[in-house]
Length: 374
Image (cartoon, rainbow, N blue to C red):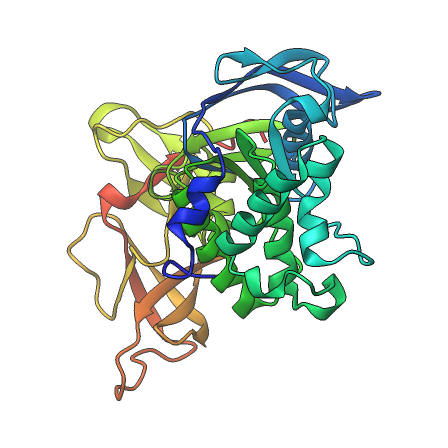
């Protein structure tokens, strides 16, 4: 399945729609375990949206609540202006692709895809037309008579997708659909997912713990931890301007210097636990319990003290070759930070373990973050 293989005429057979989805004041508990805590989200029509967070953060619980398999203690779910909170799963017009695919092993590919339509009493001629269209959309029309055991993992995942889109859902829900695939196949299939979603125009919610997957395919992301939505934004917004320490460290590599804010006005500065005194930009908003956070690629290493105001000295403690960059660990004031430098083919790495170096951080790249609600 690729951008050229998906037949536009086949996609036109299926009656899909781009609807908005609103989650309003949702709380859900299992006994004393408060799993979802006042969740509010607005998802735009036709948007590819992700719930991203570590295992146990509540993202799959929230997805299953939208599908109708979980019930909120408070709050509601609204799709296209229709409150679906009290509807059973089969009346919600929501399609869920399970992590395990859940294909019937004794049925052919075509029968697997047709199953939901048969259960709904759709006329046989209509079933055949829609099944054929769905299989063409995912590039499996030629494998309609095979059984799941005769397919690769990627092909099984496509069957699960076809089985879901054939029922013409108003919202498509994907519960970690790539977790059973190897690394190379995941890259291929996530591109196919994005292409399929764009061609069908379906509002889609994608649950994952993998930041790279979310960043590469989704328009916006809700970062979750311990049942709380920490921040919502585009991948770039979340990476460049995280709302708190949890978001910063969950999305990519981040250096975190512990310390305290000292002084006021022009005399305000940051004292790290190791005794470093670093300036704070006059217009920077700094919470009282702030940490200094910066990405490895924004810092620069030098043998001599640089002219930059936000610079400190340390020693190289490790060096890792990562292909496009060399990653240095720098021991600074009792903790290690990470600095990435672009690898120059044919040139020897300029620093060795044990070398004394200066680390220069552009003041504009410094983030002053509190821990957040997590």
